[in-house]
Image (cartoon, rainbow, N blue to C red):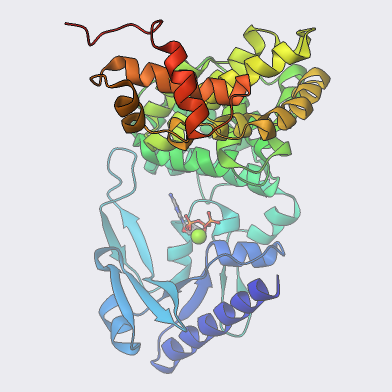
Length: 428
Ligand code: ATP
Ligand code: MG
């Protein structure tokens, strides 16, 4: 924690130094956006953005280390004390194209103009280098009233950039804010415009919602707004209905902070099966590996439910079946499933037992066997073929489930026993 406070202190000092330098060059400069909001709310600082009257080229000339991040949008990254700061020239956005953020910006010399183009009142405040707050749209008042409200006419603002609707839900969830009635109404009227927003940007916002501070509220807002029905590519998910049952079930989300487990739970709440979740994640451009992991955890859970492992009276049999499945899915997936918050007392009991079962598994991959495919080919003096993989799998199961010792001699002896029973695909 002390390390964290140290970084925050360094960040604040460096940010103040940037404001100072800009002022020395006769330019106006302010902290703006999220950092001001978070400070007013007494929340930890994540990063600092700066707005200035200076043009980008001028900013770049004032500091020894800068990166031309987005010159045409007015943004220069200033690196101070090894920390990057985005310094953006006061600007007005025009030419909103197809309900997405504008391609062209117009620089202005007035801070209020710059704040006016920002999405919500809580994000449209600025702080000067003496610590006085500039708050032309009543951001502080809204924070005190715990209200999320668009700057200006909400319909117009969502029309300019449809992503703002998802941002509204995210901020409301993350900061426990109620969405102001006109803003909410505009969101409901304009949600169809979400079809103009690239799927990966939708995913990023959803990730922040579900992986953030209050995933339960996030699900509530997604359900109440129905906004997921309006994505550019259909997600093929059933509509969420916020009722007592969903409110209750979604509490599971709060019981883990692991992103992939949060998503697993989210899909189970809808509810959908692994394949439908996979299709939705495809649409949202999830990274392949994450998608596979989430789908496999879901499939594992579906399997547990299908064979009702909870109620199997013969616990030795239950153990064997669980371990067999853990072999098929990998120990890692079984361990993920164990950490998935249990949805019932039965599930909780099973997870306790299963943790020990998983511990009992010495190995979970054929590569960990004390014999290799090559050893077996030599011992059996047979040509390689599909039989080899089948045999190695059998041996793995024998070690894990059948108590066969994982040493070369025992495994080769065991392999000989299978000799006649395996399909002899190499016979010609
Ligand atoms: P966080 O970084 O915690 O998610 P933030 O408020 O810093 O929140 P950013 O996306 O980093 O959000 O944007 C910084 C600021 O830029 C915002 O506070 C807001 O003033 C403005 N902004 C960002 N995106 C938009 C948008 N789509 N429409 C209008 N203003 C925006
Ligand atoms: Mg930010």
